[in-house]
Length: 298
Image (cartoon, rainbow, N blue to C red; front, side, top):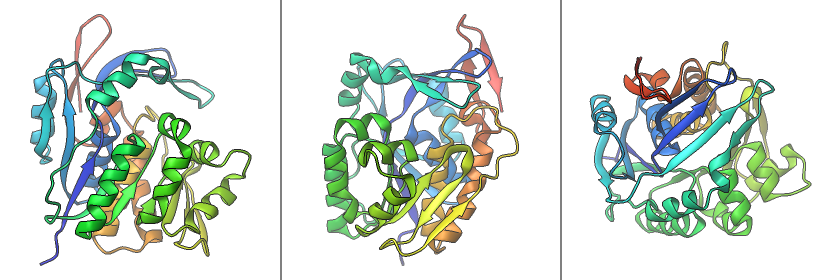
């Protein structure tokens, strides 16, 4: 019987998110979380491989477990959790101020993603943004054990080592960068040309375009499809791209082709932006306002 569980490998974090109106909330975050919830929403059985620190609220972990996410490969370390500061602006800009914080890079090293040695129970892996050294190890382990990988990246890692990322692209089943990340990988190249160039290296490419939807390029770069966003109202865009990638992998694991999987994944992205933080994806979390008041959000 073929393995039918999805493994999501990456980072969990404690996020401070400031919305377009200037209101801030402290909430659970990280690409691993949003991708896992997106895949779960799309119907996949999902396991998370990540770590949190001593300061990560236990009730957040309980909430994840209540959402039927497999936390067998979630570990708690004695160091502090990875913290992120994300600010959204009315003109659509998103600024991740933590990328400039040396402590964030230290924490990223301390919580470098790990995964089980035996991958035989997983039909597919989602590799969230991570350092090239970790991604290379994961891709090689998956290759040896015959498990396809859907990989994302971030502006921080794309800027830090674009050449290293490009070297790993041919080994992927799907590469799903944002257009901002492809501009870092191929400076000066048009977005569509960059997506086609990546696909010519072997994988299908799903280029995330924010409010403009997705650009899908088939393996080899032969066919290009643009899929508009399904979002009717944007409350909080945090994690929408990650949720879309998780749902995309869930669709592929269920047997959909890349175009149909991408189209179905847009529903997860639209759901993600419809509420505050990860609660929009169906798990009830307690969020904290800056003054320490607790907010219960569905």
